[in-house]
Image 1 (cartoon, rainbow, N blue to C red):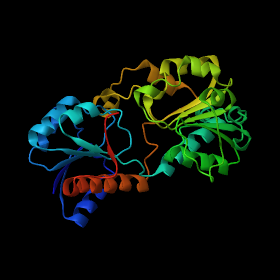
Image 2: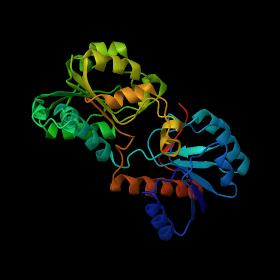
Image 3: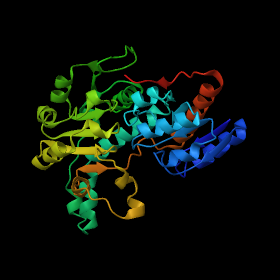
Length: 331
């Protein structure tokens, strides 16, 4: 089979090369994203494999259909940036990788939490001014003494619950479709109760339209004063303007943001252009009680290899068997 890969990161390329050598399939790798222009490169290929947070547009699927390409697999979980209705209209079937490494993201959420609890941003900023004594004044909080509210108890959320339990924290969970798991040490509650009781709110829900700005000004006002907010899920879950206002007022004690709401092509290309005009991004970066990272919660050796291997294997199943277990469809 001939497969074209889009959006390849440098660390993925060795695994793509290994997979090609192991399976004997032809793989052509591109670091550019899949869009209405680059889709032209797919002519003559059997299937497409891609990774990006920017949109997969109607034009992409129309051109795929014109080329006779009916299968796309993505190397990640989220499908909120895919026009699934357009894909179905043009006969393009899609599969994701729903569980490449839940621990990778869960561990990152805990890492952000610990960073904020111990006020390391303020410590680092004070040390940077040469004030050693001042940097010793930031008293922290212990995770074992906190109540953590995990929003979304899927694979990643459950991994986070186990980790927070391991630190001795009390864990509340909200999920509209809770999975019954006797080994899960948490209490399911409604979202408003979780917001009111938790010292730390950790988001692990998909970026579907129903969850857009699930954390808005009203939700932030319901939280304990000084609570921490962690988002390693999808950027649209949080109203960034409202979050910044809550941080400024002290209603929100800190935030760990790996998935930024306005993660546009301009942000992704900042290394090439040197420009990203977003005052919200700049203001968040300047705050010592904000951990802002570039969508890297998933980024471990285990996760990257699994994302490559699983997604390519699913594409071969599509091409040879006509089906794969992780196929996704329009809701």
